[in-house]
Amino acid sequence: MTFNGLPLHPLIVHVVVVFAPLAGLGGILYAVKPAWRWWLRWPFVASAVIAAVAGVVAAQSGYSLEHARQLQQLATVRTHQHRGSILRWLMLAFLVPTGLAAAFLGGGSPVVSGWGARTGRTGAVAVAIQVLLVVSAVILLVWVFLTGDSGARSIWG
Image 1 (tube, rainbow, N blue to C red):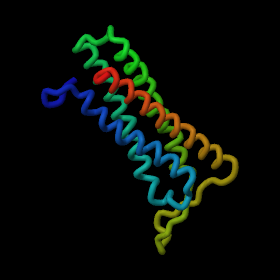
Image 2: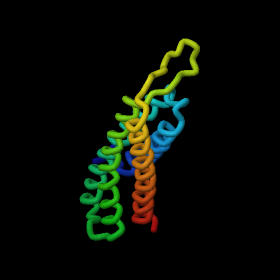
Image 3: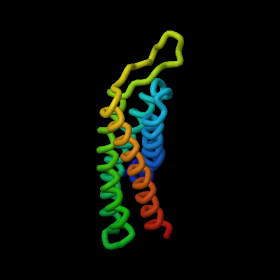
């Protein structure tokens, strides 16, 4: 898989490196700052979707690059490939708490007209969604770091 003669993997990985941490940090903020939900909702959802799609493409292009360059025997590449596979599934799974939070957690709007304000669930359901969102966001952030670190070490280490 190439783009303009270059391997697609190192290009698409940069999309993951930008949007997955944005989605993770956005998820944490969305869970703990109800006053920000009115403006954070759609950027948060969009960054999670972009990260998940880019993660799938990065995994496929990584497999392609690995086989084109015959890198399967390198231990560092195998470690990166394993972590990248897990990261792809984590980013896809992160869409579940993202969707639940966007659908069920509301927040006020500072706009005078109230545009963007939503009433959401309260009580145990809201707390469960918030906890799920924060925990999954932290796991996503850690796994993005681990995967990127192993990829950098396989190339530069």
